[in-house]
Length: 262
Image (cartoon, rainbow, N blue to C red):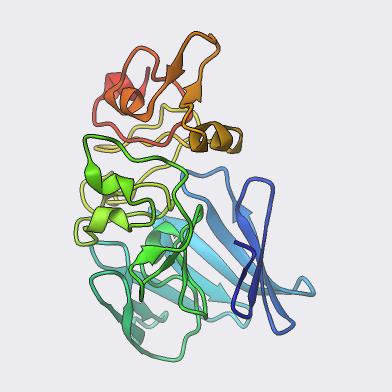
């Protein structure tokens, strides 16, 4: 999506959002896309002046503005920002959310984009949409605005609604990639999902394989993921199940280390 209301967006070749413009005011983002989940390292204005820097540990932990003001992030089990505190541990901002991520209340004056699932890089735009990398989510509609590139699976009827958010279960799942649901708890030491383009990054309970842009047309056409041998293509079901052909770039999860490292 390149425009939503009065907001305009630009992306790099990897699909990361690198610019947001509104009424001539431009915010540019410096992105670390080599990490499991792409990260915003800096925000700059249209002239290249740094507005904010972001600090990470197991997810987003802090923000430093150009004037030296430092704020720390505090999260709930879904990785949504509930508090911001200053260097004297004083609460500057409080956030509360509805079940589907709708921002019910914000107490404080800090204007920053990482609210709902902010720990994992979901960004809240001024128009109320949530940028979840692959797609935009509208918490008022409780659905995505873009159709999922990953088709549904016959054994899980909820997945056939390709606009639905986390299969209608936001209490148990999040979707920071905008591609598929993942658990809010037990997904690594920080409770966060992982994204990996090499199929072999394993945390305690979750492994994800990243889908590459070159696969999108094949996926949308229903052709699965073509292997080096023209005689075989991998379906999402086969991939998640860990078949011998499962080493492909589809995004999926597994709790089996042998499957993850195949």
